[in-house]
Amino acid sequence: MKSYTYPRTRPTLSIESTGGAKLGNCYNASYYRVTSAWRLTYEQLRKLNAAGVLGFGQEFTVKSQCDGKEPVAFVELVPCVVMEGGKVLDEPPVNPYSRTSELYKPCEYGYFVYECEARCDSGD
Image 1 (tube, rainbow, N blue to C red):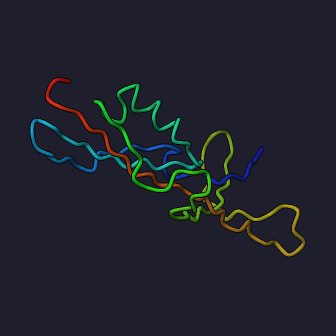
Image 2 (image 1 turned 90 degrees about the horizontal axis):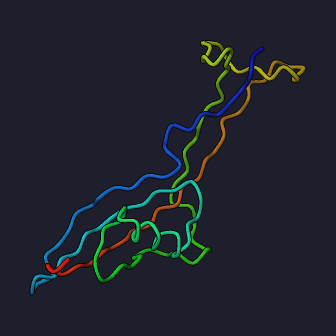
């Protein structure tokens, strides 16, 4: 049986290290970019930091908007694909309920981006 789906090409959550800085007096900062398919709260990002995924140390801040009202940072346009038996078929995704053999239109997936900073002194 054929199915029609819109497979994401990006992960629903990704974390990138974007660099670091020596702030002086044995104090350092690490910077991270978190890209998510859903809005994240400050508390969720803070828990990632507490788990050691977003750095470690005495301070953690989110440098970008993170108040539940942040806009989508970018949109990915994903085409529909036809699948059968778990495999993608090389055929156009024709809507079987369309009288005019219309193709399924691409789907838009929005992503949110958060810029984070973790600071620590040399004692950690």
